Amino acid sequence: MITGFDFGTSNCAMGVVEPSENNAETVTLLPLENGKAFVPSTLYALERELICESVGLQITNPSLKEEYIGLRSGPLAQARRVRLEEGIEQDEQSLFFGHAAFEQYFSLPEEGYFVKSPKSFLGSSGLRAESINFFEDIVTAMMQSIKQRAEKSLGENINHTVIGRPVNFQGIDAEKSNQQAIDILTVSAKRAGFQSVEFLFEPIAAGLNFETRLTEDKTVLVVDVGGGTTDCAMVRMGPSHRNNVDRKADFLGHSGERVGGNDLDIQLAGKCLMPLFGMQSIMKSGLPVPTQPFWNAVTTNNVGAQSSFNSQQTGFQLEQLLLDASQPHLIQRFIDLRDEKQNHHVVRSSEQCKIALSSLDQSYVDLSYIEANLGCDVSRSDFSEAISRPLSRMVALMEDAVAQAGCQPDLIYVTGGSAQSPVIRKAIEQKLGSIEVVDGDHFGSVAAGLTVWAQRIFS
Image (cartoon, rainbow, N blue to C red; front, side, top):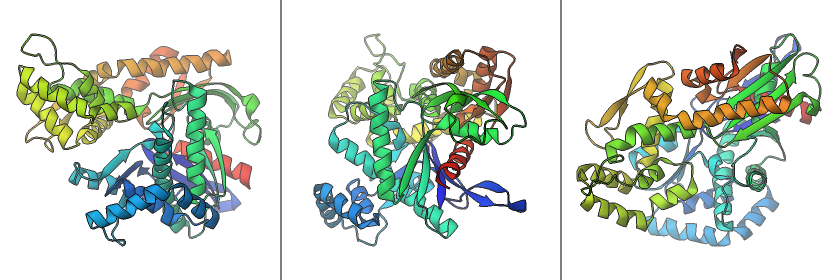
C-alpha cells in the first residue's frame, strides 16, 4: 500500500488514495486516534530508556532488527536494568502517544519522560552521536505507532511512503542541518517498516492538493504556516501542469525558516504568561530580574534552552533570585513550575489560547493546575503584539519566494494550523496587497498532497 505521511511538528497524519464513484480516485486521511485523522506529535515514556527497548521489540525486518540490537546494546541493557529497578513489568504499557501522552504528562509531569514536537530538534546543530541516536529512537517509536494504527484502519500493510519536509529544518548551517534531519527521518522510517521512502517539500505538497481544485492555470504563492516552520513556494499549477511527473520547471521560488506555530506559542507564553512567574519583576536592588531563565522555560522546541533550564546552574540562580527578588512569591511559583516540570503544560495552555483567539477577541488562560485561581486574560491585540517578531519573519519569507519567482502571484493559498489566525491573515493581506487569499484545509492539505505525489511516483 502507498501512503503520504505528514510527520508534522504539531500533528501527524497519513493518507491513501482510494477508488470512489465513477472509478475516480480520492484522497482519504486515515483515522489514527479515536476515529480522527490527526494525532498530536507527542510521546510519553515511563522511563526514557524504555523508548529504545520498544523500538527494538517492534522492528519487523530481521536484518534491521539484528543491526539495531548491535548498535543499541548499551541502551538496551540499561533499559533492562531500569525495568528491574523500577518494577515495570514486561507487559505493562511503557510508551504513550498523542493525546494519551498529554494525559500521562499532565497527570504526572514530574515523572517519566515527555517530548512534544520532536521534528523541531532533528536539525539542531552540535548534536552528539548519542543525541542523534536518541532522536532516531523517538521518531522511530512514533512512526511505528502511527504506521500500526494506519495499517489497522486499512486492514493491509503499508510499504511505500512520501514524507513531508520543510524547506529548512534550521536556519543555521541549513544544508548540514537538512541532511542530518533527513537522515534521521529516513533511518527511522525504514526501522518503522517502510520499504521505500521519498521526501517532498511541504508547501509543494500543500499546493498539489490545492491544484486538484483549479480549473485554469494560475501562479500560486503557497504559504504553509506549520507548527515548526513557515514554508513558502511560488508554483505554476493548474490543468496544464498537474499530470506532469517532473514539476521542476513549475517551481519558481521557495523559502523556509524554522519559525512556526510553536514560536507563536512561545512568544505568547513568554510575554503574557511568564510575568505571572516573576518575569519583568524587579529585584530589591531596583534592577530587573534576568529574563533568560523564563524564556528558556517556554522555549520547549530548543534542546539547548531546555538543557539550560533544567541545569543545576539554573537551580542555583533561581535560589539566589528568590533571596534578591522584591516579589519572592513570584519566583517561588517559577521554581515550583520548574521542579514539577510544568513548563510544557504552560506552553500548551498558550497554544490553546492562540487557537481560541482565532475566533474570539479575548481568551482566559487557566493556570490553576499550577496554583488555585491562577490565570489571566489575553486579548487578540496582546497576541498580535507578542508575536510581532516571528510574524515579521514569516512575511519576509513570503516576499523572498515572490522575489525569487520574479513575478506576482495570481492568488495566495494559505494552509497550516496557525494560518487560521486573523492576525496572520491580516499581515499577509497588508503586505501583499489586493491579491486574493484562499484558505486550504489548514491541517490536512500537506498530508493530502503527499498522498497525491506518493501515488504518482510509486504506482
